[in-house]
Length: 114
Image 1 (spheres, rainbow, N blue to C red):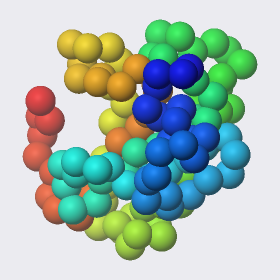
Image 2: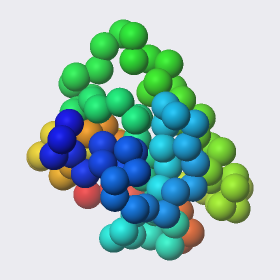
Image 3: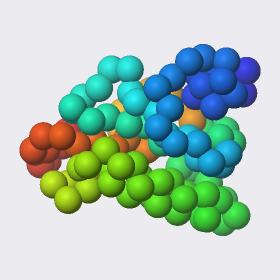
């Protein structure tokens, strides 16, 4: 998508602090962190929302979680704990309409979150 900021980051057109990239999934630091560790994980392929997923996307979405586990370990927060969040549509807080997972850590995270 020409106007999608995450597609532009994945294509290298907008700089980001990249932590992981395997060609299918990209992980980078959030520019407006909500926790000491705040990483965004996105599929390279544009998928607007969770509602747009198809059965063929199951492995890709699973890969998001595996990359989250890997990044959490590399950043040293796997043992203390981290939260993963995927918002779907505006009322849930989705601001960029490209499926993405937030990985939050580095402090105690309260519940309920919203």
